[in-house]
Image (tube, rainbow, N blue to C red; front, side, top):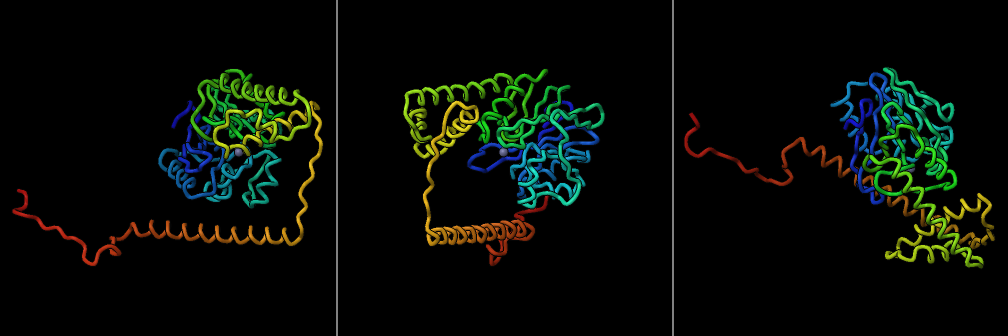
Length: 333
Ligand SMILES: [Zn+2]
């Protein structure tokens, strides 16, 4: 899908519970194209990328730039290096996570030099890199000012709100993106394009500001409260009680921000002590579960491959003798 003169979107349908729509990988530039994000390390994403590049693009991928390290965005870096000789560009803080997961190719990897760096993609296409921490510490956004296109990674999503690691940093990042000159469309990593960018960013900001105000009101009523106490008073309209832990997580995100800003004091909690036997038992159980999951995934993958391979041959497993067809009457003139 063409987004603007230099931008194409490759949309990949998702079947994730948390991401019901689609993940999008973007291609920017013409001869020296830059890919924004590398997708997840699964066949569906690689097939889509390969299919798109073979069918639609005659362009070479010169570079893959990561919006942040999360594995749904960085899963195919090695594959892209191997098949397209693409160079990899990312924020330095993402490197340890990707090394731990063994997702980085052995060569061709470099980091963004600085906030505001301009990537020259040739043909007059210039992409700015902004460090926009909040969703993760290494989150960056890319801005193609000439065409008014902002690539937001997971900092802004197409239809849902995002998970935030550092709300203090996140709010600053949002304000910065809101004030970009000539902004006309946001290209998020998940969900549809955002055609009312400023309004949407402002709505994100307002939403959080209102929740923070509510949390402060609850705290102002006095006493020492746990995040759970606060959650129960702030989220009074939460119908599905299974969302309580997620809501508590949101409250804690706000509390971390307020603490960082020196607006509240934390009375430290005390963790439960577990006996070595208890700990050993829990770890053994976790290992057992992990093994079962690996076996299940292998079985699933084998079945999927077998089903695909079977497409090449007639369905002999279904038929002793396959139906045959014989013409009634004469052949056509
Ligand atoms: Zn993410």
